[in-house]
Length: 400
Image 1 (spheres, helix red, strand yellow):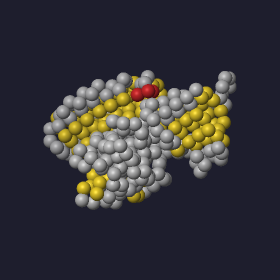
Image 2 (cartoon, rainbow, N blue to C red):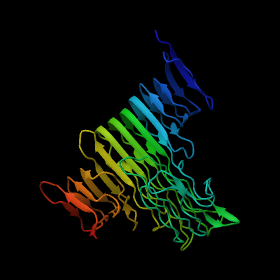
Image 3 (tube, rainbow, N blue to C red):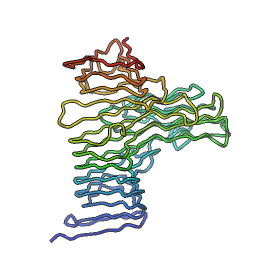
Image 4 (cartoon, helix red, strand yellow):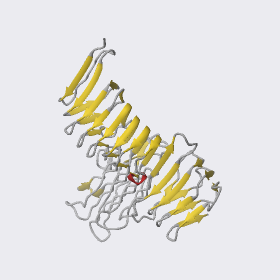
């Protein structure tokens, strides 16, 4: 007969080395860091539990994150949170898997490049210098969407990654301030990868860029915000009433032209057999100014695919936040079920990306959104009946 271990963890770090024949049931009421792959029969994170999942965690049964319970990862962990739950993973109302501000580091905020923020290169395989130092308005970072330049019109970093495979940390925002008065840029969002037989999210799964409130110490210096991170979900059944978010970090205004840039949105992809979770609650929006308008980041990407379908759907939406920046279409996919750009989202299929894109259903550009298709890109819509392209009175479609 197999042995059974019921473990209540109250220490900061506990290592379990149970024999393979043992059943392990984890009930967490304090903080625990896991830095080597481990398997449990079940896990429950209580309202006071804090799990730092710095290595892959496999659960052969069910996992429950209670209200106020938290699963996260350490700063700048490129592998991110990795949960593989055979049974049901439940994030209760008020509970969270939250890796906000856990991504690449902002300028003067732990960046290996010092005053310059960290970012990935365009192919996403190398960490490189990102948003530079600007004295009065640090730039927001880019990942899935483009970060705003901020009030001093400094550059941001290049967009990276592929929308169907979110796997990168968000990038850090630009620092601001004088040499004698440095102000750190915020960090990018972290990374979450979840595989679950059944996923119920009534709480939160977040990989948002770090935000920047109005900087109080030096009113003339406002740093940039981090970009959104990555969330990749594979589930049999996906339900709940919570929120999935890889938004870019918000920012603020300190004077007439003294803005920090909002972070670009990150990337979310969901692969499922059955889904009743509301699509409007899956977001990768650009960060915005919390006390003014302008200098918002552009939307990241949301990709949804029913495993029974041959092709998936792309959604680009920016929560009706005003932003003139276009998010480049970065993907290896050449065929989609549907493409929707709405709520002030802006998407551009650029020369140098995919040469052709086929969409089965009508392409929708609505609610002050915009879609641009470069002349070197061919857009084919195979809708059998009705319009191929729907652009409402406030939408914009551009060829060229």
